[in-house]
Length: 220
Image 1: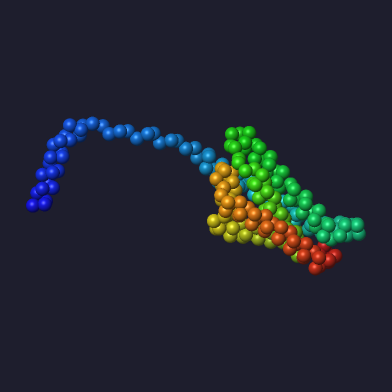
Image 2: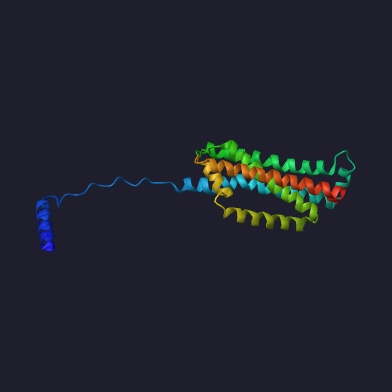
């Protein structure tokens, strides 16, 4: 009986709405066309342009120290008033300051071409932190392995391994940079930036400790 009542109700409803069956439904609004360049710019291009100067800075640090040792010019620096720590600091400073300068020029070029980048001070701070961390790593590798080719291999392998491991984290460098660049950063994002800054400072202090323990022997 219930089934018959439901069937009768269905027939009544169909009969009452038969005049609407030929009416076209409301059309959906057109799907907005999203540019794939937008996603590529903020998830690939901006992180690449901010991180690449830092990695190059570390490689420059390795070359600078190993070539000084290999050519014997490190002896000239050692007889100068500079301490071993001062010599290493000078090499690091040249590499670290170059990275944010390059990154700032890249971001200015992107903005000029119609790709605005938000939170530029935080992004440059992040680039400086990465440059300090990888340059300190490069300096440590160069001091422990003065042979240029071996030092570059160890540095490149170490940086790729560390970056690959960091990319698996929720606050990975590319993800953090992308969130800052599109102005969708949260307090957690800024906490991650602070963590990377602390990492860079810790790496620098580690190199200073290495130089202090080895003394003049640290420079070959």
